[in-house]
View 1 (tube, rainbow, N blue to C red):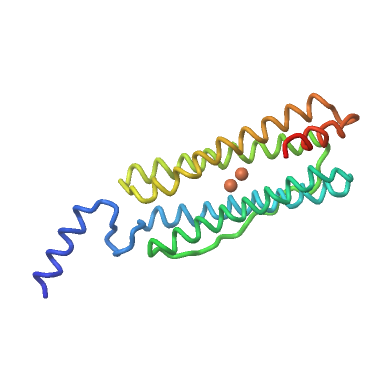
View 2: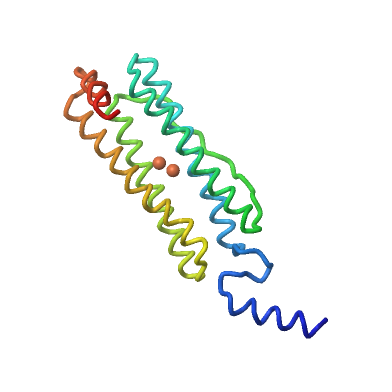
Length: 183
Ligand SMILES: [Fe+2]
Ligand SMILES: [Fe+2]
């Protein structure tokens, strides 16, 4: 019995992505992934506030866009939760910080959204660095999807900020017109 467990831990050491506690995710990455769930949910909550703000201003396509974005961010949080569970980690959803619900203008909204997307991008990059350091190939593969996704997310918010700046608050219906052509 002792011989067998000794042999199995030797095999375990060769497989760098298998951690000492027998799960496929290290306790450190497990903690970082749980923390990241909070960032994705915070983005989802911010976008729900934004969707309601646009709805209140009768900017229907902008409202629709942000309800959809909020759902996507929620789905991102679920992806992390499922990954932690699938790799034998411990899921612990942290508190989510309250997000702004008052906005000065459409431009202000897109500035906030762009900052958020940059922030999430930096967080994803940090997780990737951690996964590379730990030689956790499964986590790297998982995170790669988010690296690609963030390129799209930052570009979308950056484009929308430019459109909002070009139209100005008085011609904000131009932003709605822009969205008609996006479908
Ligand atoms: Fe996200
Ligand atoms: Fe996002």
